Image (tube, rainbow, N blue to C red; front, top):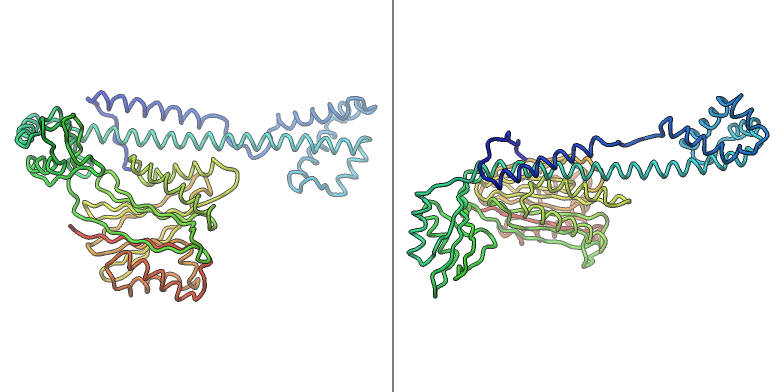
Length: 466
């Protein structure tokens, strides 16, 4: 996410309210982080509490109580400390020398040892649960902080981008009236990339309907830009007022194709992919490989892709979205189950592509060669504080991005994977993404000469200028 600009004098009351929400979330996340943190071992107070529980249970009616707990208290305390240290390091099976030493000093040695181990186990469980609570709390605090940053960033961008132009509004109202559209209000917005975005509250004159595309065309003609309805807009403007978003037309388009096969040629694959239109003239493509194969891996990767799709379509930056997903996967379960995620965000205005990687492999088929996009990032769901890396590349019209899962690369010899895959891509002389994906998968299977030992998926996305 870009650097958040300092708070200025916001004019729009909605923007002011959003910024207040963001400030409250930042304060709340800071409060969570200042609470008790992770503990790797017991404190002195906790050890003394364990010592008290052990002696209360074992030594209460013992004839040597005063001798052990008053005259020789230091030696008894040291003995318990040594037992607990040994249990911490080696487990419940203590060495013979420590047991002999305990028998020489304590006439109730078997019971004393049994109670010590029981008290230790209970204290250890409490410590682990407290650390789990701390981990969850810090995870939620991190998500709150990320969401607050997003709100602050959006607030400042909205305040900087929204503008008023009475002359343009009157001109637009007059032009739309000629095609039978009555405009009630308008919001003019310039995106951080310098592109126009207009939100018009309009309705058609009585007895007619106007195509949303015609509305966008007339809007563009009025402001001197090529405009189109935002993805997902209604096709027709009717007799009821509705708000239509018109955005600048993109300079590029993408076409994509997929080829996949399950482990041992099974129909269910643990790999899942995503292709979706995003705000700001972007196209999002993602590929996830769940841990293992079959139905369980399929459920895992599908969950990851659906979460990512929802966050991206809402407007979250890709890196923030993956970080939120990683935190949710780590703190939401006891066992470690990870998924690789390979996401590409195509800017259809500029032709640039942002690659965000967490474990998968990506290649670019250039007009004059093949480039591998490499980043050393762990899959999501392994550790809480995962560093998500991203790089940006400029693509020319007619170039392709190829994303493959681990199963594809693992089917090739270890030291030759990149070279062989780059060669297959270079030799694929087709401009149809679907044909290219199937061609590449066929070449890999032909080379391996065996049934797939893991799920295999290849996604190919081509970029062309309009």
